[in-house]
Each structure stands twice: as structure tokens, then as C-alpha cells.
Length: 242
Image 1 (cartoon, rainbow, N blue to C red):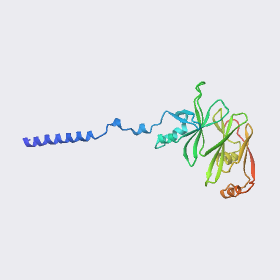
Image 2 (cartoon, one colour):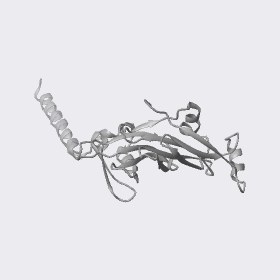
Image 3 (tube, rainbow, N blue to C red):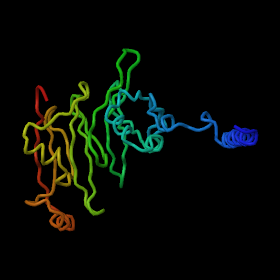
Image 4 (tube, rainbow, N blue to C red):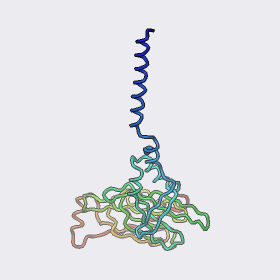
């Protein structure tokens, strides 16, 4: 290799090295950029406030349905910020609350949570309830079963309802003894449930429109009457293994 070729090679190598150094100077250091994993990682616990501003601390491991929802979310921090908690005024030693998330038009996926009791070592436990609008609840005479009413808006003018029975000591859903009544009043929002009340520890009574059809138009006509007729239905809950 002659002297001029050798000199040209050295100059080319130095030029490439200089360009690499200049480019590196403009690349941000990795430590200054948030990683996608850290920006959207699941937190170990959830810290919220209920409707009265009381703190709510829940281990995420006690909320399996909510944890699955967050795992499928594109923006975990935003979903957590939109999550709500409502403490239920149950006359029991444990604290129960509703965890509401994935909300749209007031309809929310809702979990019932029994809070941990550190003094006796009981962890928090949760079960899924419904994807509607929580309205109210009635406690059975013995205080062991909560009957919760959820509404589902149709057309902005009609509310259909479901009732969900929960065994509070066992934290299990209780179906109706009749599969037909369970489907009509507890699984599917078919009728507006005007009122409901317990008539024994395992049986409750609902009042709904006295109609043969629950179609939208029929219910709209019924609601326009001065004294719309109602029908009472008694529903017995299943006993034993649910």
C-alpha cells in the first residue's frame, strides 16, 4: 500500500469515529427515559378513597378480576385513577365495599370486597357482581345475606334491574332455587324492579310491572299510567352448596 492510500484510510477511520461520537452525544441515556414496563406495571396494592373520603388500601392479589382487567389495559395508571370505591353501610363487624371500574354511561364492572381484618389475620377477599349501575341493597333478617339491586339504562328513560344475593360470611353468590326466576330477576335485566324486600332469611319479594311483556314499548306505556299496576313475585334462594 502506497503512502497516499494509507493516509486516506487513516483519515476515513478518524472521520467515522468522529461521526459516531457526535451521534452518541445526542442519544439520551437510557436511565433518563421511563421504560414501558415501569410506566405501565401493575402496582402491588391499590390505594383509594371511598365516597366519604375514608382511605381504602387493598392488595392487588385480593382482587383477581380487577387485576385481570388492569393486565388487559393499555394505560394502567389511568384505569386506576378512574377506579372508585363505595363502602356499604352494613351492620356487621367487617367492612364491605364496592370496587367500581371499567365505567361507561354510569355502568361499571363491580366487585364486592370484604376488607382485611389484621387483628385476626383475615385477608381481603372479593367477588364479581355485575356490570350495571349499583343502586341499593337490603340485608336479610339474620344479617348474613345482602341483596343488591343493579340498574341497566335503556334509551335514557327506562331502567331494568337485576338482584344479586351474596352470602356475606362465605363471600359467595347465591342463586334462586328456581332456574327460571333466577334468569328472569337475577341474571338478566328483564324488568324494572319497583321494590324488593325480605320475607324470611332465604326468601324475598319483588314488585314489577303487571304486564305479560317486558318489551320497551309496553314498559313505556305502563310507566305513563297514573296508577300503573304491579305484580308481586316471591323468590326463594337455593340452600346448601351453591
